[in-house]
Length: 350
Image (cartoon, rainbow, N blue to C red; front, side, top):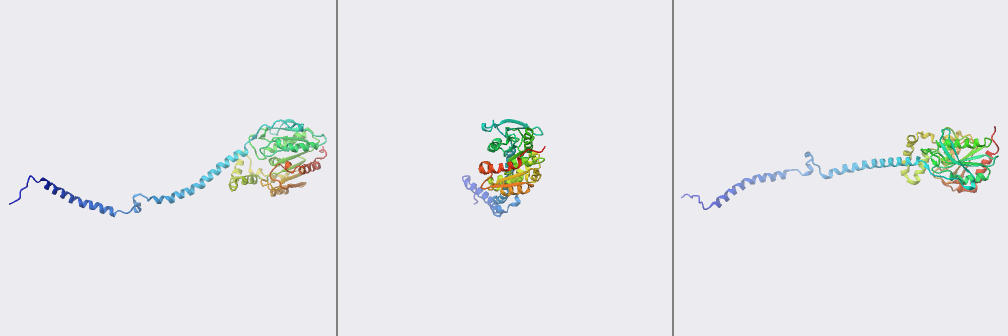
């Protein structure tokens, strides 16, 4: 007998149907599994545009290596520009009246180009000459009071004044002695106009000494004392930055020097007192500190060597870049008076 389908056994039939479907799905699953096994590892998928994470590290390191010098250079340029702005910025401030013991009076006078200068005039003996005192950078006439006192006591008339853009004298920039030279000439002319018969001497300290030499021509005086005067602007900048910043200062110095022309309109070559001193017609006493690291003894000797005849040199033992009048005291007063008495004695011819 043939078996007939039993309506009471649907579960067995359904079970067989599911079994056939499962058997059909197994080959597809096996194919997918085999395909996954045949896929290359991630390191070999470069053709798909994917990269292993570690391959970007060398490029990142290279970018960092390249960026660091660029950032450092940008920082150095920024610092250099800021320092340049500070160095040439005016140093104006109130000065006030002269000390009562000097018995001086406040004066105003002008350069040939009309720039206003303010200072003090102290009258000396009528048969003596006059001395112009020229201060250093970012200072004013008060720094020369000690010199004024002993010169006045010796009978000399004395003129102390503020260079342009210093103290109470207006000005847009400090120019490291170039435009300041017009103020020194105007001060000498003031003393000559006051008494044309008497000789005139000048003491210039640091920037003030450079102002005696720079400009169209060195100062037209009868005797000149130069104290701690830089030889050229490049050396002056380097010697002042290195003690403070070390090797960084050596990098910054050229950046500052390069700004001179753009900021001040002055060729760098014009800021070289050692090149100008050969045109000085007056007797000169060159003074420097034997331990000065800003204007070194070697530079002071070189400045002296470049001067024409009728010159003297004094390196103050133990002195750095300081007020040599205060440091050397009696020795300073003696040397200065001997020099001026020698060259300013008597009246000018004519």
